[in-house]
Length: 61
Image (cartoon, rainbow, N blue to C red; front, side, top):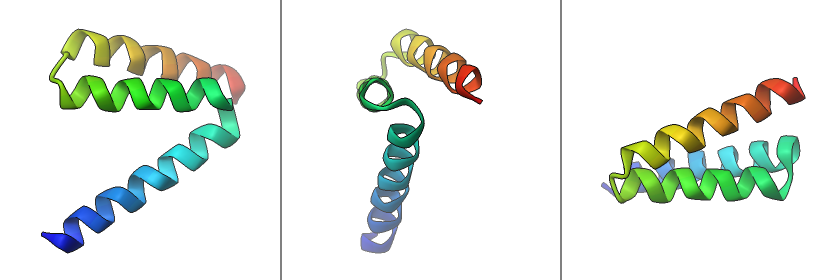
């Protein structure tokens, strides 16, 4: 269980670093909102945040 938690946190750190390098602070805020929405089971909010994040990342590419 501890290994799974460690891997999950490492992936979250890598995702946060990658998003911050591509989108700056706005990307971190969107990633934070996505995490909160998924944990709170707000599927509509999670879908909107995911769509906005996807659009911003594709626009940057």
